[in-house]
Length: 212
Image (cartoon, rainbow, N blue to C red):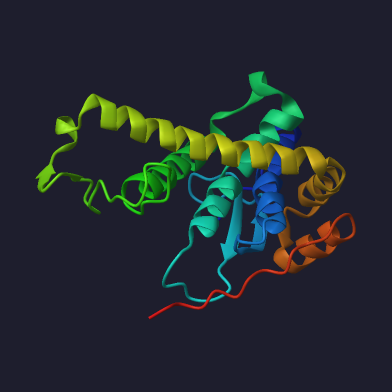
């Protein structure tokens, strides 16, 4: 359900930077899905939204794609930090950070995509595999739990650094896109990419083909 468009100009610009942050990072990372639309028209609890469209129906997702999604999800928070400073970051990234933490944790505990090696430490239901048995999370050894937490932190921090770099390197086009978004309230993906392409090379998105 669409809500009432934002009236407060300060809030509108802050949310515009947040959403353009998501969209610019997703656009400039080759492994990320393409931007479909960026809008400031509220829907449900969200005061702004950025939609991404997968190139094809995906069966399997690569490590590179997961890291791209984490980086893109951190683009909003990175834009707030870079544009307004760390003291002015908002609660708007709360849902993004939950999503980011969940994806990074699954990379470590389910998909074997970290320095812990090709181990599956949790089932889809969150149960923990250690040795030959199935254990509850409370039975984790502190050492294993600490190593998992450290790997999750490493993945998220690396992606956060990438998001900040992309925001910093593309500030000029971000400012232009924010002005346009504040004015129009919605930018479709094609127009967004055309404007970005005036300032930098936009990578051609990979065509994802499911493996059966």
